[in-house]
Image 1 (cartoon, rainbow, N blue to C red):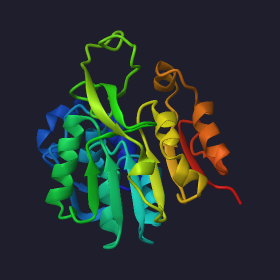
Image 2 (cartoon, helix red, strand yellow):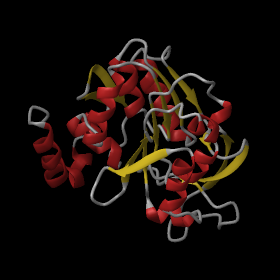
Image 3 (cartoon, rainbow, N blue to C red):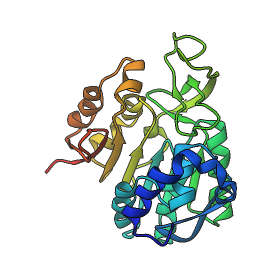
Length: 265
């Protein structure tokens, strides 16, 4: 199936294989990445939305992958906020020998796989991994672990919320949080990718310094309305942080889930 054109390959996966992906466990042991020759992701999770797409197609979020790869070829620093198992960190680091990544991942399972993927691909010198949640203050935050079979569903939980997310048997733990402004200096940042299941406003409040300096050339982020609401936010809370720093926000898809923000001219 990997020999098919990318668009057809992705459609075939979702139509024919997604619901039966556990029938091919060998594909999840090591999956070569379509946009990073010689790079593979290891120990993927059968049943996981992210893992399944990568295992069968070598791709995840095709359009965003293409955009980021084009930028990565010019070199520079990327902040991967909510790095999961490292797909975008690997793409960025592999695209140019001088590229660097600071990857934030608070969830223990994905963070372990992130470390493994970076190490096994020989990219440890380019990727700095922080086992912390990016937020608006240093300290500790409550964190809902996602289902074991879904690596990308965990995220910061309301501090005064229940011990488990309503309707789900999910463990709530305490993780360390850090402000991005205290992690990075004054160096230019080519790309920041944020995918933190509704905690985007907290991340942005914690990096107001670098945004107000327009130190970040491009920010890709997600607006998950349900997860935003669970933390008491709306998409406007995200856009407000960008607008106050002079950034222009633009939706990348018809559902207005995926967005990009760039400095206004």
